[in-house]
Image (cartoon, rainbow, N blue to C red; front, side, top):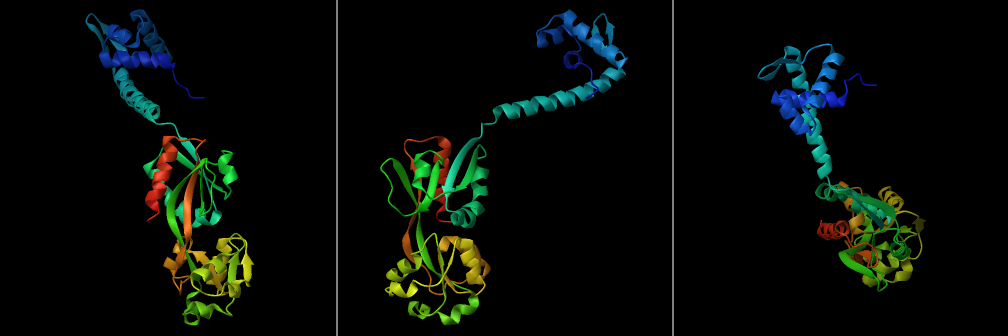
Length: 289
C-alpha cells in the first residue's frame, strides 16, 4: 500500500499553493473556505510540517511547501494530461477477417501493420476461413477468397486478379523451358486446390490429363518448402510466393497466367460501419502492392 496523505488534502494544497489564496482555492474546487483550510491542516498534521505561513494579506509557502508544490505541479499535470488523452481516444472497433491460411500468412499479415498504423482505432482479428456460411452467420465480418459464385445478400469487392504458374527450385531452371517440358516431372499439389494444375494446363493449351498425378500436401507452406527442397514442381498463385521468389528460393520458369480473381465479401445484412469500410478501401489500395 502506498504511504501517501489523503488525496483531497493534496488537491486542496495544490489549488491553494498555485493561487496563494484559500478563498481562490475554494472557488476552484467548489467547496468552502473552511473546507480548504481543514484539508490543508490535515495535510500539515500528516506531514508534521507547516506548508503555509498565514499573514494578513493571505498565505505564502514555507520551504517545505515550495518543495511539495514542485511535486504536485508535476504529478497533477501529468495526471491531467494522461486522463485527457485517454478520454479523447476513440473506442477500439474489432473486425473479424476470414481468409485461407496461405493468403493470411503470405500476403495479408506482412501488410497488416500498415493498416493498423493508419487506423489505430480498428483491430483486425484474423481467422482461417473459406466458407460463405461463416460470413452469412456473422461469424466473420469480411471474407477474402478466390473467384466464385456468391449469394445475392453478399457484397463483393474485386480486390486483385489471381495469376498462377509453376514454381520450382532454381537448379531446376534448365529442365523447364516450355509447358510440355513438365511432362514426366514430379508435380506437387495442394489438397485445398486439387485442380490447380489442370486449370493452368487448360490456359496454356496443354493436355490437362498429364498433370493429374503427383505428390499432394495439405498446406501451401508445405508445398512451397517441398518445391524449394527440389522435390518437384509446384503450382501456386503469384501473390502467395512473392517472398520465396524475391529471396531466390523459388523461380517461376514459365511465368504466370490469369486464373480468376480474389474478392472481399461482406454480408449486406451484417455490419456496415466505418471500420469495415476503411478495411475494404485499404484492401483495394493494397491490391496493387
